[in-house]
Image (cartoon, rainbow, N blue to C red; front, side, top):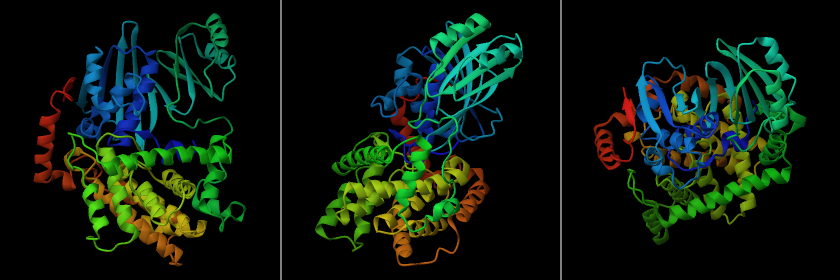
Length: 529
């Protein structure tokens, strides 16, 4: 599947501390709800003891997102912080079990769902930045990423011939028969669900056990025959000799092909995201409060000292630090933010771009173009590696965000595609090996500092690229190195709360204090280990 800037890099628009926990879990919950025909009576959630979710599912918002999704909520729903209590109040019986299940991926959800009509199972992965993949339904191996309208038809054991007849009855983008011991699952992927008329014809022909419709959970759908003009940086430079044009124009070219959109559509979608970011920034600068967080309102003091001139003179960088802090504080207060490329790294790219644009009195049209340039760098990183800290450490989040921000700032400074890519390469080179070790399981410390560092690194690298510095290593090669380094990190340093700052005495004390505050909110379900 070709990545989309709006599906996989800049977005989702969401609440919560972590996109790979909150937004991805919510998307998994929405698909699971559809599998139960919007009627969930009970759910068993299983996490592997050796995976990341065993220790972080409560503190980083997996429970919040999953339960909100099971109740059909959107990722921006203001009720999400109380989702654990709400699912209990809705009468849905929830049991979370942590055991030795041998799941290969660190962010694996196995759900067993039931109601008065029956039971279904679903296994899904959170792949980073809000991305998901359902890999199993009722014993059938599948691959659902939420980018199609999925019509699932469960048929009995009458044989392959019956399933083959089913495939000829609907004209969809993709049709496939999955076979297991208990029969066949016929899966239709399309822009729309299979029509009622076709379903009626199928039911006359075959023994149909049940039909389920799983709605898309990402904004840009896939389609048959989808092709993109390039998928790597080198391929982009080879594409019709595109080296001197602005990177944002190449981003528009890519996303237009990926989403079947016009240039105006792409620009309008990014403008909507910038408007969300402006609203979030204003909220953060005004001041936020949330009981269940570590850090209080800090950007207010920074703004006051900027105004009175008592900070060291860092020029544009001080405004960027202020904006990054404000956006991170909105995230920690469960406000609406834009993951870019993740919620844990949500402030580096927009904080840098908005800060630099405001310092130079540029328009939001300039911001839109810079964000698109950063988004295209994210496409290359996402294709060549991952945005999941559980897989490759914080270099996959803040490191990727720094590279994206560097390209965006170089674009904002008038650089062409070659300079923007050089800035991204240098920024990512400076980020290799960054561990993920959130204090008390909250995505606040050292995450705020790492977002500030990512934006600062981006500004330096953008200016270096604009001045003609040689990045030496091509961006595609740096991405390959990033992936190798990240996957070589010990499990304890990849967002499991088992290493680094998360194991300090102070971190444990903060964790205990926060757990006392959340008792009664997060313990409304049964958990067994």
